[in-house]
Length: 522
Image 1: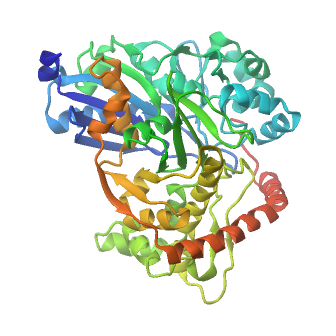
Image 2: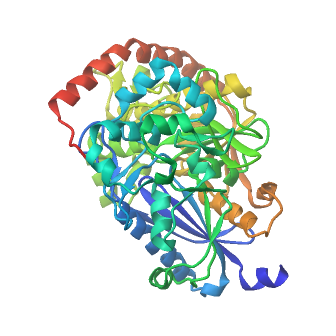
Image 3: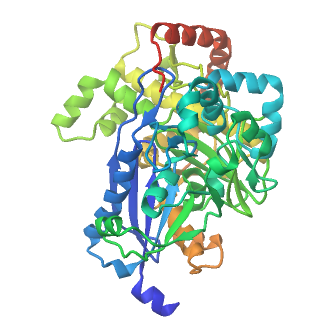
């Protein structure tokens, strides 16, 4: 093992996200020595659609891996392995040659919302949830496949495999279809009691098990990289690739949030609140997910649809002039807008924003939810609208945290990660909103760090995942400012009441949108 460490000092992590793929080159001490990010568009041709080009994402993976290898100028022999993290709930139909017959349908796609409603109302949904740990929602490939079965039968008949984006990448690299237990546990079709595909869920979709990928552990190793891809990446053809896991469970590992009372909050494009348990555990109310990492490492929590994507919408649609001015001054527009928001007191002088721009998952699981500014008056300025939007994301995080607290108990500390964790302003807002100390590790690329740790485990370089404590250094702690906490407590009840009073109107406005903006068929 000593010789291996001497000759192969790096682990490469690829984190396939919703808006970008990030690649990290990490040394044996857990330090990120090089990183690269490649963005790609999210296509939303109708209110209920959210798709991406799988070939663009594949190219981003190949180019991103090659970029970090070249940045550090290392040789292929210095890379111990490449380990993967990936966003959940994606679905792609492919033919026998592996060509995509559809775009990559993402977690944010809501076209199967009516199927989710029917399944929940039947009572069958709760039964499936209790075995799979995936809440009944159109994010789930289970519901997506039910929609395809009825709405696109010709496409289904032409499909060889239904796969996710990481499976698509591995199939192109190695010619094999594999899905790790972690991503499988987020499909709504994986029975965590049998660790196999759930027969009743498959029956609902009309899909047979052999139309899905082979189930493998998250530590599964693959070798035999195709020569052209090895050359593009700057890797040897025999470099081990570790299938890896979902970005959510790896984020907990990557911030060291797997001890009792330690909760991880990640906000990237979307967001999530998560805690770790040693065996599968579901929520009696069906509001929280339960996803696998390893046999004795399961993550319970809830996701929100609207995280950093809300800030991007504010930048592009509300504060366009301010964002352009920031660019002219050589300032990051997000930093500029955060500074603008900081000029407004907590509570935005009574302006609330429900940031439900793409429906919502936890804790409401309502695909028809829509964004709302509430309390707007002539005294409010653009800076109030910016701050209210950022607070709205935190109200959503708080709602999930409250649901998790009922099941797991009150957290002692929150570990923050994702793009938002770069902002001291947002971290302090979270502490004040939830009423719990927030800390941030020295690296916020938690999913990538988690993937690298899993890679070491898969290669036999560490005995168990508790080794993460050797890598994770916690930085600044944000204590709760009691005066702001009391303000947010008061506004939380108003926020929650506004949501519940608007539920029927959310359905009505969604029906109107669907009527007047017809969705494409694929």
